[in-house]
Image 1 (cartoon, helix red, strand yellow):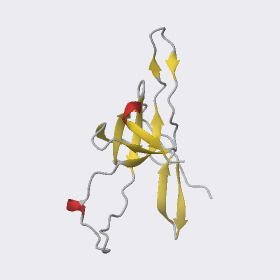
Image 2 (cartoon, rainbow, N blue to C red; image 1 turned 90 degrees about the horizontal axis):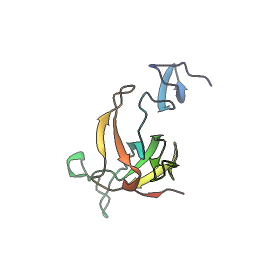
Image 3 (cartoon, helix red, strand yellow; image 1 turned 90 degrees about the vertical axis):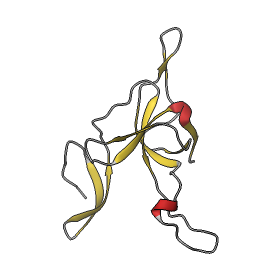
Image 4 (cartoon, rainbow, N blue to C red; image 1 turned 180 degrees about the vertical axis):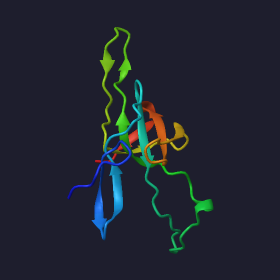
Length: 124
């Protein structure tokens, strides 16, 4: 299936009755610098042990996300680049209050700019 290019980014999604139900941005206009990466938070539905769904006001900040873009890596003392351990498309867990929230100029969605040191783990 082929989805037309929109807003400077390629999109991939499921097309039903001429509408795209789910899209994923493949190319971004933002390029993180150094050891930074851009992550879109994945919000999971939160329920109590008894099955009550929590409203948005009672939910905690998400700590899991998908990496959309990565920087070139940090410079060491000799001036060589140290590549990052994460790559685009990885799902990661990050520290709760790490990073800076910005708006993606392509989609208008909120994304996080994190340092690699704020990433706690990759989902295998």
